[in-house]
Length: 398
Image (cartoon, rainbow, N blue to C red; front, side, top):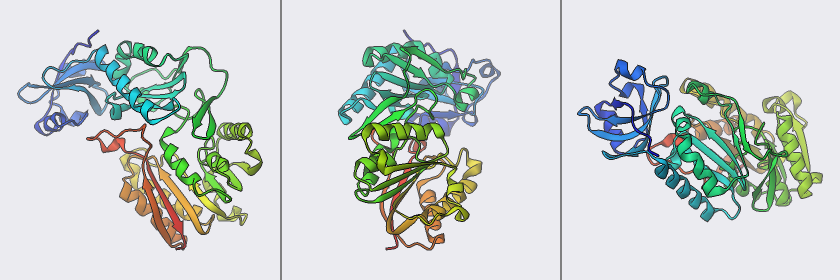
């Protein structure tokens, strides 16, 4: 089955050069717009051309969005069919199978796996899928059969409740294929088994991107106390407890996330060394609420503070404030870890904000490690936006 292009989209010279070099996105300002393009349906497959109408490639097009084009196949003879999409899914799966002993990982990371608009997390025989573009939704009959052929899932959870789907003109109604889930699923990372809610939990239900960073932080935990701020379902706190932490304190505003963390701690027999606080983190860190408790290791892993470019200054100020307040909770010679998943916060900006916050708290510091997302989140070589996660580890009072 082939997705036949239904229209031609002509690009200006700079954009055409970028596309020919492998950049996967097209913006409205790049296009020689015609009234015919206004008649295109969201997600139509089109042929992208240069000013001389030479074909650059084939991809998805949505006239309603500023980011209106996503390239799927390059070259004059480019085509998009079930075979192409299946091969990319298989290649992505083989990469993960070689990297991870247990089939719990991000199987598809959108542009990083040359499948723009598609994110798939795998939990053994359960898949959690996000389709974020109208084009990938229209192509679903071409790629969905490959999910069954390659992974034989018993359940697929379609996580459709996304703002990006609303912008693309897609339904936000969640859906489920196959066997109903009996509750939260197990997520295994090394010696740790978490619990993830794939129906009501955040995003796809789990954050595989921090896997390596969780293992890194757990390496400091044996015999120590650890504070996990924005703990979600125990991402950093539970590995620390399994690694022998004397005390783990997890703080999150979500009662659901804390319940998942508590259940996993009980199942692994580490709950006696864990405690949980349901609170908004800035309120928890308010000096007027300070209980005087200090920790050997402090982890700060907030949600994205910067949703669009206009909020960059306010977001960076928020990271600075958060670093200052959390640093107070860190013992002398303690370990301080802070991350950002805002792709609008460029690594140098984020680092500067965190270090300004540490200085505001009167702490000296040494950067021990700068890291990104784990191996199942590949970065498209021409798309720095794909490289969104930044993680910094410091030793304080050096």
